[in-house]
Amino acid sequence: MFLGTYAPKLDDKGRVILPAKFRDELSGGLVITRGQERCLYVFTEREFENVHEKIRQAPVSNKQARDFLRVFLSGASQERPDNQHRVTIPATLRDYANLGRDLTIIGAGSRAEIWDTETWNAYYESTEAAFSDTDEEVIPGLF
Image (cartoon, rainbow, N blue to C red):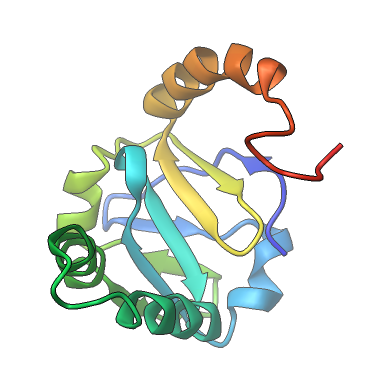
């Protein structure tokens, strides 16, 4: 499970060092793809296969499902960490997420997310109040 918040830097070659707590889980390979709110999702290869299978079950006749599948999968990139635990983020994904040098990587349970730090800070600030107000209707049985 991916948990926590980390602040690595993007190097000049578009690589990022994976947070130490994520390395074991991602060492066998990972998939980076477009996420919602202009971040990047990082899945283990196995979890990505699970997500893909769920997407495939949506009816092809549903335009919203087709659109989601196209955007989600067309940006996907299989990566393998190097010996220094770095992964390359492809230029198209860096552009999509508007990544600068300062990154924020968060654990989001079944995936990690990579954010430009300024974008993450703005997102967090704008959603923190709503987080405080979340009730049981949003996530049934949580509390």
